[in-house]
Amino acid sequence: MVEERLSPGSHDYIELLFHWHRYQVAAELVKGLRVLDLGIGTAYGSNYLAGYAEHVTGIDIDSQAVEAAQLQYHRPNLTFISGELQQHCFEEKSFDAVVLFEVIEHIAQDQQQSLIREIQRILKPNGLFLMSTPDHDRTKNFPEKNPYHTGELTETELRWLLDQNFAFSELYSQEVNAASLIWSRDTTSFRGYGIKILSGSSVPAPLDTVTRLTLIAQASNAPLEHSLASVCVEYERRILTELWDRSGHLQWQLQMKQEEEDRRQIEIAGLQKTLNESQDTIRTLQAQLDQANRDVGIISDTLLTMHESYRERLERLDNLEATVQEINPLRQRIAELETELNVVYQSRSWRLIKRYWRTMDSPGLGPLLKRMRRTMIKLRHRSSNSE
Image 1 (cartoon, rainbow, N blue to C red):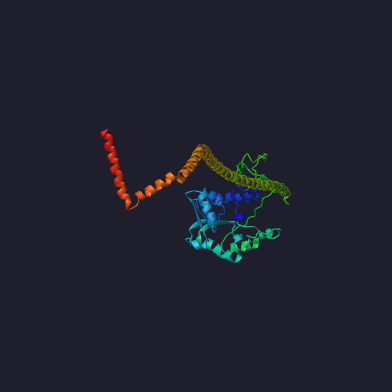
Image 2 (cartoon, rainbow, N blue to C red):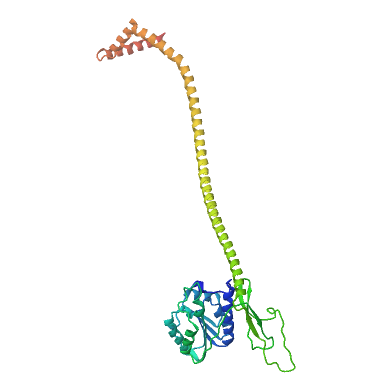
């Protein structure tokens, strides 16, 4: 149903003319009344009616549409509620007017009678019912069918539905066409309405000097009996069709440009994603490079330490080699002494000395000989002192 909801910002200006014209006519008829607007859509119509009525209650089965309306439009005499009309059980004769624009065709025909009866129940005895719906006598010949319109009515069917529930009813036709309008600036017998497109949005505007191009007059010395106010339309709508075709072509060009822009945006988004991924990769590689540089620094420090240790060891080795050079003569001297000692060991004197010490260390003679030796040393010492 979103496709069926028209907003003032739409570029479908033909539909805007249809819808705004109906709401402008209705606004004059509901001044100072309590109004129920059934099927609010985007709620711009309810908001417009609230500028004239005592109070407007807008209702829609789409809760999201109601929530959007509550956020967008704020008037003390404007209320929005969601749900079916019957489920709210409004009091009998509680509204002066009920507006049902472009809604009944969305309701199956076997349920339309009960809806109209409920509307009649909540209307005051002299209340006003305003409605609009596509003419099925026309739309049935359209090549494209609206899938949302499950209950379109012909003129005969609509007359029967109204006659079954109301004592008086009038049927009007509405069409958007290329036309020439003649209206009086001096009387109010002809009601003219218009819309303006401002900053991409449509607003109601009366017919005024801005919209006129030609001045037409009649004059007489006798009272003027016939009004010139009238409308002349091009019957087969060729002018409007041509404008539609041009508009459609422009819309097609705009759509093509929009699609191209969308593709460009998608491409830009893809490139941006690739750029972001590349930047992430660069940051990752930079982090790895920084870590590698830190590792190289650690390895360099380790190599420097190892080099210093190696240098110290080389110095120690050099010192050891110098020490070895110093030790070599000692080794040679030791060898010479060992040779001399071996000669001593082989001599007769060494054998006598060894025998002497063995005797001195023997358990039997050793102690006696040691005492005799000490006695002799003492005697020698005394003899030396007496001299």
